[in-house]
Amino acid sequence: MRKPSSLALAKELAIVSGNANPALAKAICKHLGITLTDSLVSRFSEGEIRLKINENVRGKDVFVVQPTCPPTNDNLMELLIMLDALRRASARRITAVIPYYGYARQDRKDQPRVPITAKLVANLITTAGADRVLTMDLHTGQIQGFFDIPLDHLYAVTVFERSIRQKRLKAVVVVSPDVGGIKMARAYAKRLGAGLAIVDKRRSSPEATEVMHILGEVKGKTCILVDDLIATGSSLVEAAEAVQQAGATAVYACVTHPVLSGPAKSRIASSCLKELMVTDTIPLAQQTRHPKITVLSVASLLGDAIARIHYEQSISSLFDGIPG
Image 1 (cartoon, rainbow, N blue to C red):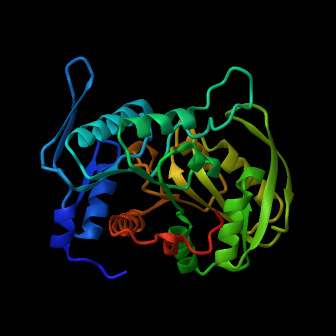
Image 2 (cartoon, rainbow, N blue to C red):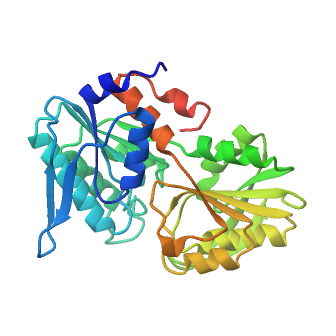
Image 3 (cartoon, rainbow, N blue to C red):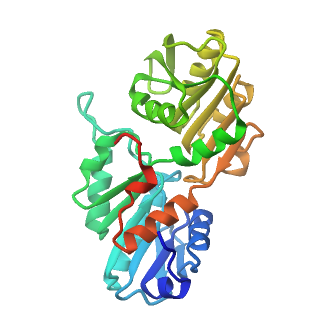
């Protein structure tokens, strides 16, 4: 795609950010060669969100960069209020850029009297004023169908693939930490020309799992665990230990969204993982940083997608060959 001039782009396109991940929004703007739209996102004395867009956005194609990461409720409300403000400011089109889509783990009614929060949040975003959504590595693909507006789904595999190839690893096997992640693992394996394995496990509670056995050959191999998010880290660490006990020579992990809540940092620090690669869809707090954790940026990927959406071009080339 021919890169348009920054001046021409700035006249037609605006990027707005809340407090969830301003560093990523600025990195996207730098990639596109434009400046971040000035806005005020603060709090009133009682805690309510105070917002004002300080620049004219009338008739512009506006992209709101706001992952709904922890604190999830605050960041989600900021997103909804920004969408409402932009709609009332007569923006031509509003795209909610949600690198990490929170409330996604409750995506179906698998027990009596439970909500489907992934659908609820989709309804809220649409009602607030979004015309389309750009997101990355949803927890389940079916969430795309919860929106009644266009949704573009990006994959971080291209970012991880570049980093993995630079390491020049030998005898690589891509491992899914559970059966549900097999589609993502297959995409990584195909792009890397690697083998494929699955860790079969049973979940004893929402926070704890019990590893059963491994489907596939990992003995004498370099294993790369892949997943969409890591919260407390129990599933990933248990899967890493399982493949190491099965004879893996080294264990790496690629996880798109580093939620890293609770004891995640200590679990990763004491685990057999040689390196955990994550992206900057969620800002990594100082207290969760560790030498084993490497952060890769998705700013250029999101920036290219934003430019293609703005110019009504296909973004399929950004994830060619990836299932889904």
